[in-house]
Length: 272
Image (cartoon, rainbow, N blue to C red; front, side):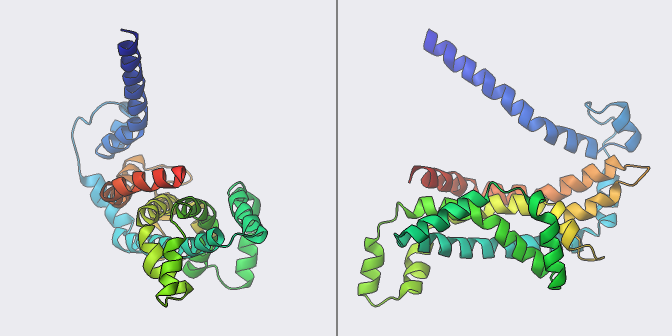
């Protein structure tokens, strides 16, 4: 009986937590179909009249196709570069058993504790002097800020891959790069998908760093363009919520296709 009550309690707590997690999505999606006056009249209720006009206006005013391309380009290139460089760095650190490699790994892990705001001004000033306040510079910054967590996750997974695979490949004539690229890297696929999704969600939704680095017309990402709906005196919540709904669709699709690999990759990295 006591065990049954514990299961009911856990289930009830899980249900409450699920409702709390889904509440922001409910508010966003439901209010995206309302007119502006209806949002303020009844925020929690369902729309009296479901309208798709908000999505049409948001699509046009956001220049959504160009903005979507910018976000896909920056997010995609950043994530690919983070995956490749972080996997290579983690492989080198895990296979070289020395005090230097241990110290470097500790530095990467410790870097996760440094808040971006503390290095924001000197970083932007330095990149401005180098003429890299553009998309390329932004991708390079994402590589720096995303590598610490990615290397940490890869490092945990690589501990579970035996070094005998490296030795066997070297006996067959493979060099160090071929061992990594053809033997080790394919085994890191679940963790690579995990690292990719985690970084995509962060980069896709990032507003602060792109606002400091890229601001020219035609180069904005979706979070930057969404700020267009929030003026000094008026806030177009109906259009902003419609734009937000459009912006999360690609990430949700990517997550649902890769969710099994994400869970497997996190479990492997945590255990090993």
